Length: 357
Ligand code: DAH
Image (cartoon, rainbow, N blue to C red):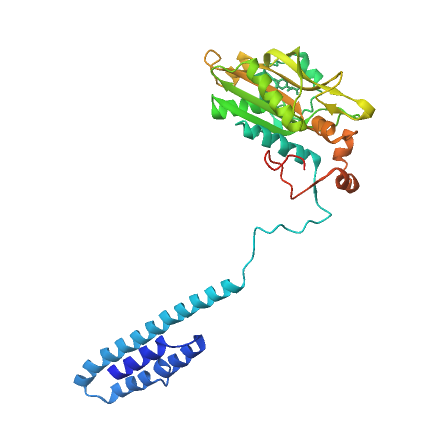
């Protein structure tokens, strides 16, 4: 029995492949294998002999079976290693660009804006497009009678008959995300909130659905000076120019005090916009210091915290940067337009790699 054991352990160790291993299995412990035949002999033994030989044979059969299994696994590993050595794939290779897919300018500009503000430590926050009128208006210090509600050409949803709760609205701006973010994250906070907004309006520069990005920075000692710096950095980076002059015009928004509208110096020479030089001013956003009532609505103590907010039209700055004259074409889903104004899916905007190239 020991000879049998040594023979098969040795043969198994030297088996070249799985086929050779299978032959050995049949030879040793297959139905007519050497060990199986020996087991048949047990029947002819005396009970005493059988008591000694039986367990020994069983143990031998088990040992051979596990040696076979172990060798099989080792051969499998070796085969896999060998395959992996031949079949390799360079996952860092670029994919093949295809003509039919391009990134919409709105997506591109949203990515650009996000890259710039992320670099300044702003996180992206989100909120629902169907919003309660409390978040869209009241929490932003726009009470029920306020003219801003009418001015915004709000889309209202329907309540069922007999339901007297105020209807939800399609959010008219991204400002309600300020409230949600403050409630969720508390102070200090630095977020931007890009997204869709809705107003009943339609002409060359207005569509019923458009895009804004909201900004909010709350801390112990944030002032208008910080707002000005952040916006200057943003405008320079976004329009990819070295220097830019911003003009802060006193304005009024219910949710900021003081409030300012921001213009950038530009020229329209020859019908094309040049940012940073010239005698014209271009209005790009609304901003200000967050009103104490707005902080309170966000569960933040206005005696301990203060900060700035701004709201910027994404579609508008996309039109300006990329020279797109009619806003309505953005949402016509015309493939020819997309191919002309769209961006390669492979060029992800980053500050290091370039925003638009
Ligand atoms: N929500 C304003 C609008 O849609 C834009 C705005 C102005 C946002 C001033 C702000 C802000 O955060 O401080 O017209």
